Length: 153
Image 1 (cartoon, rainbow, N blue to C red):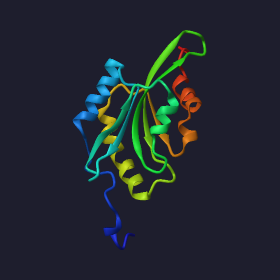
Image 2 (image 1 turned 120 degrees about the vertical axis):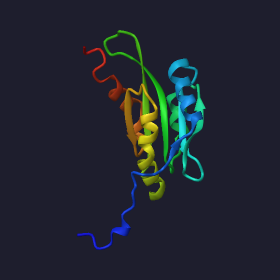
Image 3 (image 1 turned 135 degrees about the horizontal axis):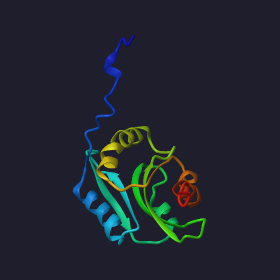
């Protein structure tokens, strides 16, 4: 049925690799708990996922402020919360794909097609969050997702 198959791009084959520094930063967050969150971006040539910034700020608002309003990013956040049943603090490592509605189409496509290479490289993720606007990554929204099922065993 396709008269012009040239129009179809192999989007899933982005060819983007994960920078070693990105893996090191993730392992430091996961094992050392010295970092609260990591923001990842594609390098200028769109060939590699690199660390854009890291922070040890305990403020979730600081994390949200580091997500660009009109551009895509990936992020890892060490999400701590109190259990509803009063069993104490829990911590979950959350992976974010930030692709705001206001971002240009091309970056959204490249980030979407490159996500799996980063996601597969990071082990120990508790939740995956897809955010297209700030309401989808609001603290209460994430709390509801990560705490679902916690303490119900």
